[in-house]
Amino acid sequence: MQVTKTGGLEARESKDGKWLYFSRPPYNLTGRGGRSSIWRKPLEGGAETLVLDNETERLWTLADEYLYFVDVEAEPHATLNRLDLATGKITRMGELEKDPHLLNGRAGLSLSPDGQWIIYPQVDERILRIMLVENFHW
Image (cartoon, rainbow, N blue to C red; front, side, top):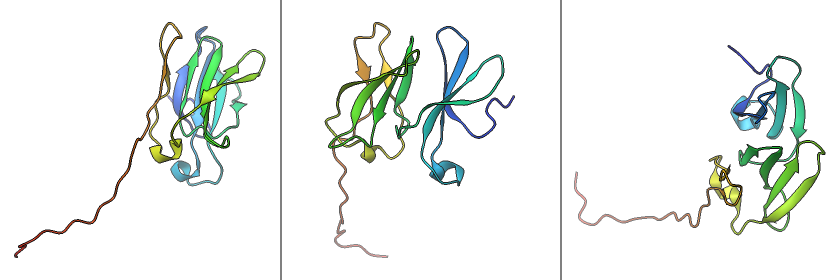
């Protein structure tokens, strides 16, 4: 059964079971212009509403009454943030050490069940090399 009407990617259900949160894919996945964003809709049915209009590059998760996300557009480095879903207040939790743009769309922000640890993918190096094969014969 189709749940979203205008595209969707990576869905997560709220702890109380009332809401479905999902990201709307960026233009390179849907063919339309724009950037990714996070939306929600009532699980009982109803309109989709915008929750977060920050480019997260698929690095977000839900935990209790909070949405954790990486703001990849923050300067000078991407930041880890927490959005209070009840108040709409965003709290900056810290800066990321490496540029998440190297992730090329790989997702995966997770919070431990006790809320003490958060994990995300990080690319430490990307190296392209030109190699020579000696004594190559057809």
